[in-house]
Image 1 (tube, rainbow, N blue to C red):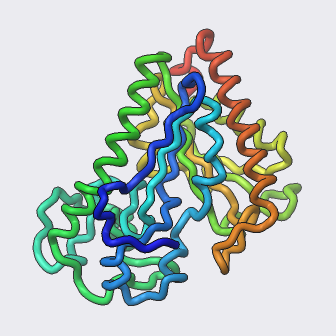
Image 2: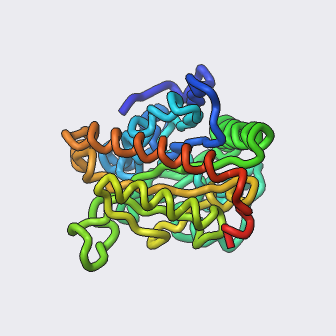
Length: 299
């Protein structure tokens, strides 16, 4: 966990470009940021470990080899508890602010109602994050300086690959608490990975199946869509046949101590498995792309 003076240098995310010939893939880690603004720490009523419970800690590091495979990696520096990039920008709980907010908002959002809008109200077991209401200008500032640049860069990276290859694949990278998903009969006592393609609407079913097969070849147990079918990012960007978007949720117990937020001995093994999987999926997609009706395959 790092602390900065509200990202005064303007660098709120990293776009790590490919180091070899580009491929039609983009990897995104919107929740792996661990750099906390001083303003957040000054306003919260919670201790730092509690704030960190919503992080996808180290997910960006698990996928940091994809630029060597030809795919950019875009990752947030700021934490999810400060701003959630996997939400619509208008999913704002107006009751959190001391005056009307100067940005568009939506009514009747289940995520806002639960306290988990684009600017979260709660963390962990329903614990309020803030000790008092936020200044109304804070909503506009976070959307303008943190949300819009990330999504602008992600959209541009996908558009460039559609232009260059005719199609693109977005892999949206997340983590889940160990024990969050009950294993099916016959599994090894845990679910290692959940792939979410919004029940086949954001990604070709063939691509999802191949992704799952490659992961299983690495000895990982894989679930599909339950309870993580994909969030706002897969919904917004996943429009086969031009863009296929799939979410991957990784069991944190495979690679880190969830109480201390430290990597353990499983990290390197898992990272190698994920890089082999990513390489295999890229090769498979590029070999099949010319001969597949992706629209039909997505239905």
